Image 1 (cartoon, rainbow, N blue to C red):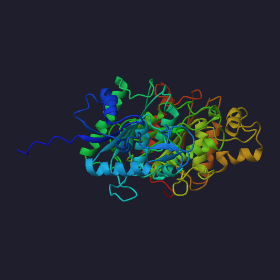
Image 2: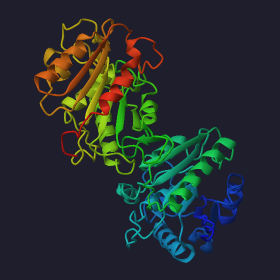
Image 3: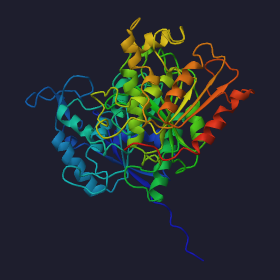
Image 4: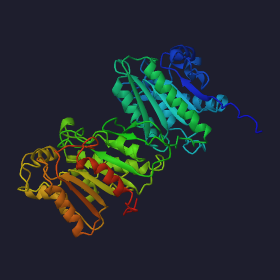
Length: 504
């Protein structure tokens, strides 16, 4: 009979207090939230090195190094030098040496801002160096903010260090560290979990917050016991919101994983409709549907006229989403050459723009563009808007054209540059298109035009024109008619989609 399994070791978490706090103060503040977590975690509270010298806080934020220290933790948007950072850095490294190892770091207020910087000092492969002397696997920030010190802000550029599970708790009524500051910090992380509560600058402990924290720590414990690598490379189980752009919390994409970890080999990037006035039109639930069929579903909240944006912002967001999914494919259990797009209505136009012209525009902020393609490996179009050509099916594209460009009556050359049927080439990925014969808003002729262009170039294409159905049916899962079978037919088509074209 084999010996019994040893009890798993608790997660050891280094806990960092706020500007006017201490180890004892944080222990009291965290008590209600930590209650009941004793079997799972060992919380290690420490004082900032400055407290021993009769000072307070982890640093003082000053305009210049020579300025006298004052009561400023560095929260506001002004440029600040963090006086005392070197002392703090040395103190933290010493704590890791003396009190470690630690599985994670938790910080509140200025301690959360510090936690965000310590991630940049983290060795992602576990092999520490003088530049990256810390080793831990996850981070929890409560009421945190990004550094206002330009020198320290460079730590956020170490994207491999920030590719770890992170939990961000913040209050809508926080008057000390505003909600947007916490979101800005979270945007630097590759896999942030954001939890907003109705309170202020406190460590909330209501049941909903406690549930998320317990689940997050439970996942970290399980990952460690299963031999997960530092950085949390196991595929997450719950949906998560991933910012598209470095240093910004929005726009973002919502990532939904299959119920069985490790099941996904394919990802489907969803671009919903909305005539380019919104990204929340038809196609709701498609990311969940994809996850329910073993894929990683990704719904992109691309910018539109509602957010005050037009081309090229809409295109840049969609391209960035595909690149991000491809860059994180290994982390999410996806084959980087099996990443497709599903576009509904105007979202279909955007999806086809990516597939026909994947380098149409490159945003200067897209650091992935030089090495990661935005072209999808397969394309599914649902009652897509395809053409902007003037005089074609009058009325089918008027609002979308104006919303896309942000101008009335663009000239013919501009319309043609963004009419997808004119830009299909032989290297285009396989396509599945469906629409209805009596769609009164975007006529079926749009889909037929695109299918004909694909056939002329030898691109594998499947076109389904169902007899009846209004525009904007989305998944149509509950429709009793023939159109209600489109998802089944698309899944069958996907099962035969071969290895895609293009280098990744």
